[in-house]
Image (cartoon, rainbow, N blue to C red; front, side, top):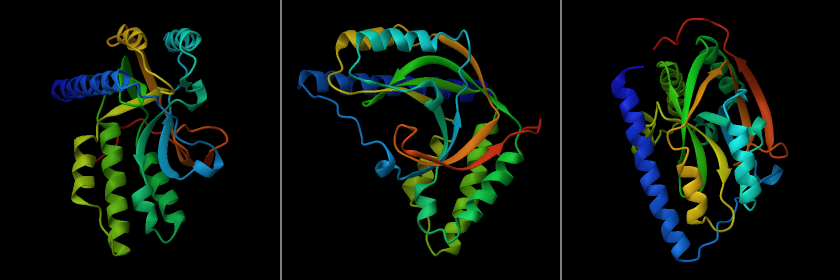
Length: 244
């Protein structure tokens, strides 16, 4: 990956930290109590292509989460097998799609044409509603994969007589290389002491995470067992990078 893209990722995460911390500080001052979104089968409304983050031994993530959970148990801590990175959310594209098999075939074809890729996990970040693992792609594969998926979805939308909003297309371009994996969702108050604990790991290196498979799922906000249906799986077997 180029240094310019890596620097942009760092700046993006710094900005999110500043926004998240300010929002959480204000919420704490106002006595705001965070409420978890619904989960389970009834909340499984999101069609998404995801890649599960492998539980890498020795990274320390599990230990850190266990320690935080023992001290701040009100929040939702993602079970290790539900920690994932979103490759692409497909809610909008799927609304007008006539045949889901077209989507499944397209995903398998695109993912199958890519090689495995590595996301380097470095630092914990915060948003107004969560704590996440910051992920830095080591090559352009993730961005190219998202670009190709966007192209297929836009083509199908045109066939169905619809098109993505300009704001959606801009967001797609701006965040094509962004990657993160939620580890905690806030429930109840978020205290300064809790945020101080998270801040200790803002720049901590957790090591590389190899991605070699994707899943098309219909799920809730948590990828919970009760609220997730795996529609299709796509293995990444080739050794070359995605071709634009």
